[in-house]
Length: 126
Image (cartoon, rainbow, N blue to C red; front, side, top):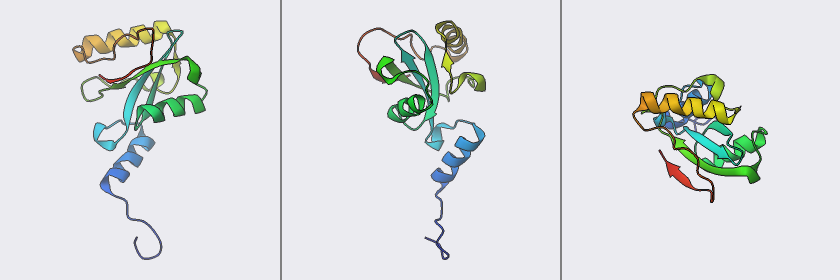
């Protein structure tokens, strides 16, 4: 604690706050991108520190019902081209999700999220 009652921010905290403000996703900033799949084939891409946080943020914003969640996969942003802003933080139709997935697979040499499977929810890394 610094005199005057303010807290000194660590580099990681400052980088995380900058990431949240600018929308530039840095793997070292503690914020990752998550591909959340739902029963109906829709997808939500969220930025969060963990899968649990991504699911909570999506539910809080009304992006898909928690009971319809199938699986979540971390998107390795350092291996893929930037995901356009208009795809982050909104519900993607199954068609939009397939198109984005195809673009990521072609440019990311196979490091894009895998197609969702039906059945039990699972956690994984891409």
